[in-house]
Length: 107
Image 1 (spheres, one colour):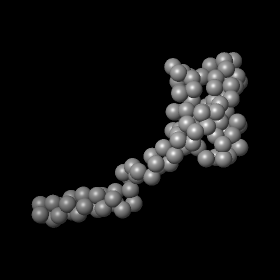
Image 2 (image 1 turned 60 degrees about the vertical axis):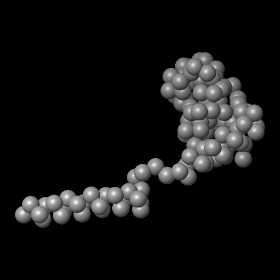
Image 3 (image 1 turned 45 degrees about the vertical axis):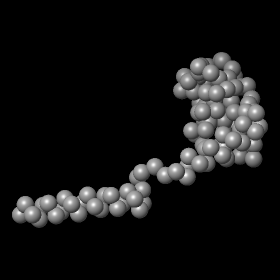
Image 4 (image 1 turned 180 degrees about the horizontal axis):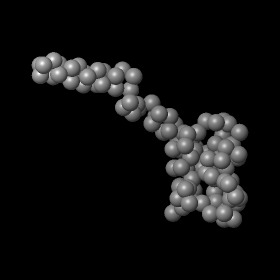
């Protein structure tokens, strides 16, 4: 009986490792490459931005989606660009009535 349990545990471990490698719960390198390309584009464009006064219900994502018609950006790049345009400001704590610089992404 102990031998059977050991074999089952070993098979389970091998299945989990094979699943991770084939289908993947481990992070892949391709999203990171996409973010690097986005950052390079912003550096070429000299980090274009628009100053926007925050109104009730606004979040970083909602404002960036409102200002940009295209969808060639990721949430991670939005946060990085917002923090670089507004040093010392956490995008989770933007305040009502204050103006902040929000990144613009070209096509």
